[in-house]
Image 1 (cartoon, rainbow, N blue to C red):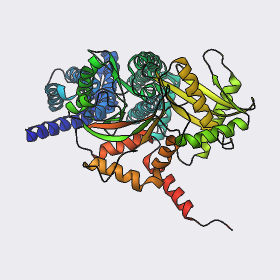
Image 2: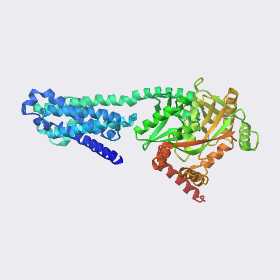
Image 3: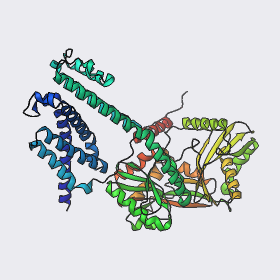
Image 4: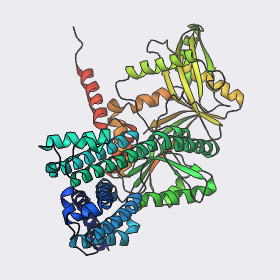
Length: 576
């Protein structure tokens, strides 16, 4: 069975390589020196069927460019590329039949073989494509136009005897650019009918690609943002209705992709790195729809040849994941506060209590800022300034995916609490995100000025939790302590032992223990275990890489370099 699959894959890849060859051949056939091969009428063909020759040449060029541009997407088994390439190859066959008067040349059999292979293996081409970004749209447009300009220049050089001023390829390239900019065949100074004919075809081709480029750029600039806004609003409703995981609201950050349930109401939030779908938290759906949504998402990932890794999941659907074949490993612990029971009394919260008392003596007050009801540009400028100062003080790039942003450009359901110095300058702020139908809030973003007095953040968090308790909110959260509670010596699986080893022995590099102690001093009423589940049930290097990369979008090497530089600086003796 495996040999059969390998053989099928090899044949498909051969056919895809033949698509590249077909694209190059079509571009070559569109060049002017092939006009005399069209039929037995020779030079009369240009005079009698000049419009046909122009259209034929333009279509052949477009076919060649499309075959080349989409060949890599076809190699990735993208569904849309399969549809387009089948249509384009069929057009290519028709163009060759009209060119060679219905005679089956060897190259026709070449393309018919490609069509047959693609048609017979259509089920394997089922991957969905990502929405194209503005950056890649610009790259593809410029690349396509460069190819068209170069193709026109080659054609002009081949026909240099048909123009009065083209002596070398430099002249031909300059003339090609002029045809693109001015769209006037008179500038070409043709001296024969063949020269005029090719100039007409070049201008027509330029118009086709310019119009196509405009439409192509409109997609990421206009269409995609509209769809993204609609998707975000849909996801927001699902998060507010079903988002029981404290990390659920991170679904609305801009670095996420969505899989919406087809036969059920729900969404899976993910990003793709190295053919691994890394999911942010749990399925966002009702309990009755969970098995349908998970099955659909697993089928979707299987079609795209993706493994799955779900980070920071709760125990709500844990048995469902296990029954579906996912492996499970403890990922850390979440610091939770049952607000009706929480207080600062006792020795466990002594440090936080002392910090808050110090902040109070310094005259620091806390208030909630509500941008949706009373927007204040001065407050927002100070918040942004504090955020920039905080990021500048950090020696590592800001992490992503499992961490949220400030979101002042679109606050939605976020809550902002700020601390002021004697009612004046803002010293720090905390952004809270809702979860579990707003019965809980997580302190997602906590930032202060580098010179802020001790206790600023502690006072903000405690004041916010107190206010929320009075409003009827049940739970507060300080978020995940990664790898907390994972014991290397007690773990049986290799993944657990690896996580335990990292937590115990690489703390100087990653700061896991410091983060855990910072949350522990608040004396949470409960530490809830969080898990990572992955499918297939073997922890592989691609999964490990994807987990690190998705949270360090600027690159793992940059992250490691910064950490090593810090360690080296710590080891240096102080300057005298």
